Length: 122
Image 1 (tube, helix red, strand yellow):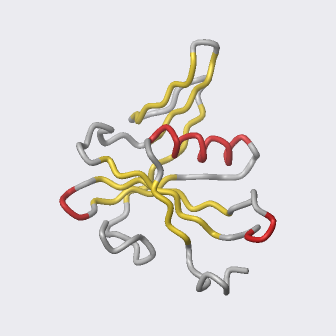
Image 2 (cartoon, helix red, strand yellow):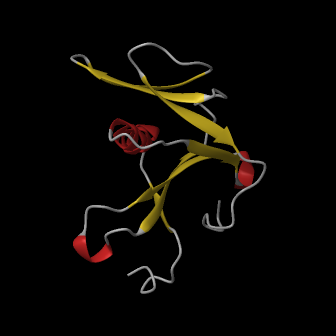
C-alpha cells in the first residue's frame, strides 16, 4: 500500500489548531501516546504537527500521515502542552505552560530544525 505512494509520510495541512487538537485528543483517548512537534519554518512561522496512521479507508489502511498546522501570526504562544476539553459549553483548545485537571494534555516537543519529511515550502 505505502509503496504505491512512495513509502513516505503523506503531509496534510489542517485548517486550524482545533483540527490538529481533535486528531491528537482522539489518539490519546484511544489509549495511545501522542505528542505534537513544533519547529520554526520559513518566514519565522511556527509549525505544529503530529504523525498518525490512517485507519479510515480500507485501501490505504495503515498509511502514515503527518497532519500539520501553520501558526502564521504566532498567536498560539510558547506553551509546552496543547490542552483539549469538550464539555456542554463546547470545545476548548489552548496552548499552555502546564496541564490542568479535567483537560487532555498533549505534550509539545520543540525541534531544532524542520524534519525532511515536511513539505519544502515550510
